[in-house]
Length: 253
Image (cartoon, rainbow, N blue to C red; front, side, top):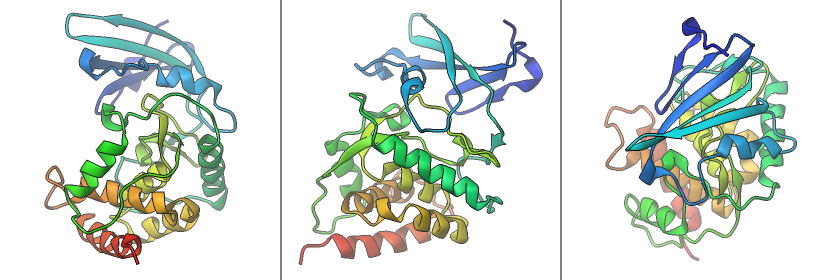
């Protein structure tokens, strides 16, 4: 098998390329202390998910050096191009069928069964992490306890989905997470385009209007508004306004 150099795509943690047998190989390097106890095989484990539109997994090779582990996964080619970058500045043209496919896949994912725990940004998501992240930005008096944990992609953004044919890829971080994490993450990736953010809220309202969905909205807002957020991020103001509204709904009484 040979990788085709003119098809190489570099992302934050990975590099991928088309092969001479019309498949895709994605290579990731991860520091050894960033590999969780559950292992580092999200793409492989996602192969058993039912009802979720994704490229079929074929095989993998894993190796290590002194500081890090390397993993190369071979999958089928994507059915279409990625929608765009992780955070969009203009609304893509997405037909209703695309939104229906998104909803069907996310709803199907949420009813799967797994012992995996999601690792967004390679960090295992826990109740303590949710509380710490939310409290680091929002000090209002409300309970941050998560009630329901369900399987989530855990890196849902516009760079990890295709259009006009819907498919969801890059499954290395998936696992159980608070209900609404994926919906809130996609909403946050859309905030620079108000109409798109509103469409996401409409399509995923069952998640985002739940108590856990509101907590996840604050969780993703904390990433935008917290100390690692960029001061010129156009999403800051809509994130702040939404957070204020959500907090009012979470306050006791």
